[in-house]
Image (cartoon, rainbow over the protein chains, first blue to last red):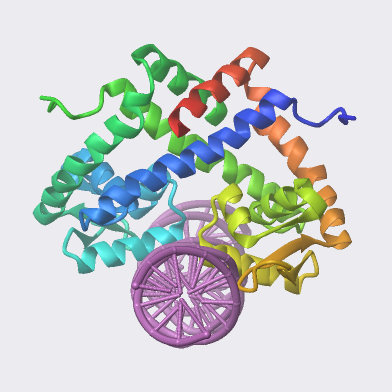
Length: 147
Length: 147
DNA sequence: TCAATATTGATGCAGATGCATTCATATGCT
DNA sequence: AGCATATGAATGCATCTGCATCAATATTGA
């Protein structure tokens, strides 16, 4: 029998499918990127956040907050992206401890190149599976989980 | 302007939230397990699948299929769980290449111990955020993505 | 002012993951 | 039967992640 703090059947099913759908769709999309010799999605997330930011630059801490990356993962991802020439580190003008990460023009080009694959992949693996109203409803329900 | 193969706004939002909600809720739940000194969720997935299987045993390949683990990850996860005494490897009676992974009684005990934290965590982080009909609807929409 | 504390970001080390390959056995073909 | 190919599972190596800690600079408060 179910203990009183246990989740309902429907809750467990929703949770299981959330994990499974996330993994599955992410796997399908990442596979397309890899097949096109493009970097993983986390690179795109960083490029997107930077490109949307004022002057194409953000403090690492802010980038971490927006991408949900852990501090040390962000630090190392920035290392790799810097080595690849997609971003650069600048000293922070007002806070000597900090820095600014800036997207380079190579970075912007990479972002566009990735989107050419990524966008259609989202359309195919998410958009085509749902009616427009269903996509809106799904987004709404998922948002409730985050709040 | 949007290219004709690009996803709609609603699709992109749904996709972004799917990834974010998955990560966020998973992070919250894993944090509770860790705080209770319990192993990661992948261990629970394996224990659950084994416990549900005929005789509490499955071939690695079948386990991989059910848990979405990659072959080499499964092989190593089974290593660790075997070392911890939660599962054991048995030679496969009919296929000399293969084996059977069996849950031990310690494994079943661990499964119950994990559920005591995991179940309520699901209830709190998923169940309480949604009305019952919403949970059902969410599960339905996520299923469409997997198909 | 200056010592104590807090914050930003990097890093050494251990553990996990991904990839390609390997080893062993099974299956198919002639 | 005997060889070629396919399949199940493990493993060496490189990369990535997580944790704890460190160094540098900022902020606070006496």
